[in-house]
Image (tube, rainbow, N blue to C red):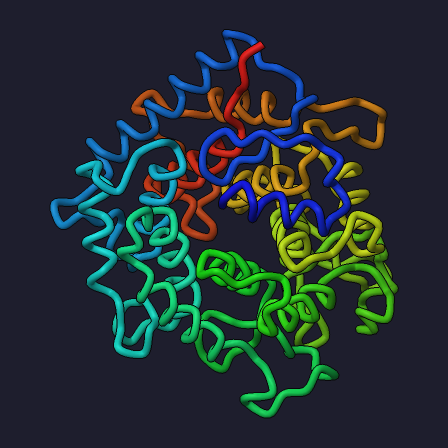
Length: 382
């Protein structure tokens, strides 16, 4: 993301008073941010390098792919993680991965495996990757066509939906199935990569769906579950009466959980909500009350590294150098993320989750998540 683009987003969110410095693509740092120690910087560099070395030397196949058995999505995540950590599109490993992804560009503009049932997921990840590599405008056409394809998957007036319907504005994995917050946040990221702004109608529609995923009863969410657990966090989907893998409260409410709460916070910022918007305030309050780097709040180890990525990306977008939890403890979250991920890194440089749910038993995927997380935590010298 460019400085102008990032600054515009933060201005709309009421954080414009922070003097911003850019440290690498997509990374926002505040001028009054806690400065890192030499040890922090050394740990960061060593951790990133070991992760990239693992991917290049042990993770990548001859055709440029990473974990191709589960489609092109992992390759897109891994290539993006390298690009966001200073490697370029001409790096041999990145170039091979990009060429592999180009082979999945479809006539309809999507970027997915033939007969794929997760077309939204795969296309969104690919567009974000192509954007990160698009320094010479090589991928302009793919980004433009991909944007049109993704907008066609969103539940909207085009398929007879109205704003009053709970599915409106959301998107699922790529077919006519139920929409969910995970896929909808991927959509907002891909639209941003393709050049959309908060004024884009697809982004406005997505915000309507995202708001309905929040445990916050308001004019933006009148679903029955919203009043039963009004903690400001987010669930997986409001469709079908609502669903959360974190389970239900005693009164039948739906429990919020970490990965979706940070996914939503990030997406609301992109969609133009300001800091004083009740939805943003409630989401930030939830983050303060549920601050954790030892688990995905509400789910434990499940989806932990997906959570780390969304945690770092959302707090980076928020523009806050520290976060004070509900006990009054102030967290230099970037330094804490570096420490936690360095501790969890395997001797060969990879990361892997002991919980294999959501494919996090795959070291290529998890290492990609970890490196993306670290790309938002780059230390700045004292």
